[in-house]
Amino acid sequence: MMFDEFGFPGDTDLDHAAPLLETFVYCSRAAESVDDMEVDRLIEWAQRSNADRGITGVLVFGSGIFFQWIEGPPSQVQNLIASLHGDPRHHDIVALDRSVEKRDRLYPNWEMERVGPDQIRTVLQDALDSAEDEKNIAALKRILGHLDSSPLDTLGRK
Ligand SMILES: Cc1cc2nc3c(=O)[nH]c(=O)nc-3n(C[C@H](O)[C@H](O)[C@H](O)COP(=O)(O)O)c2cc1C
Image (tube, rainbow, N blue to C red):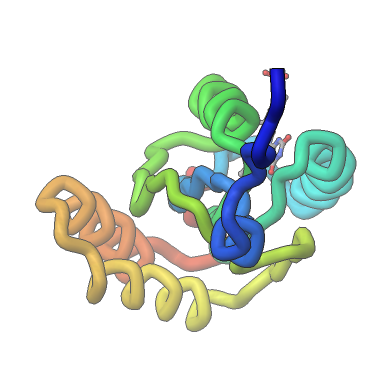
């Protein structure tokens, strides 16, 4: 039998070989037992674990509130989401965005920022401005309300 040609994909496919990525963006409130040292330990551990699993993103922590952007292979991101939901170090998880698409990473390196009360308010306000889901809007307003009514350094540590 003769082969006239081989079934290689066209050039355009090779040019646009963006990986399939799942993205998960959420915010949550830290448990009362979580202090700065615990956050440091958490970051150190997450950096290693994420590197092994091809997960990158950003974690912001300020005023007892976490905001995290996660991107990576769908199966790995789904495992991490399940772990996050069972992690007693935070609660009131609000999913802000979740998608699966072929694209390049927004955050190719793991980054971590520890922000102050004003910045976490900006992060949440930006999320609220672009939120469309009614439940997300209500949850974000609730979290912003907590920020306004609680002494900032004790939020999440009642
Ligand atoms: C705010 C927050 C962010 C976290 N981020 C990550 C992360 O980026 N990567 C990770 O592997 N674990 C992260 N963890 C820890 C996971 O929730 C979980 O403890 C870890 O993945 C081990 O899960 P397992 O026991 O189900 O294997 C985070 C935990 C918290 C509270």
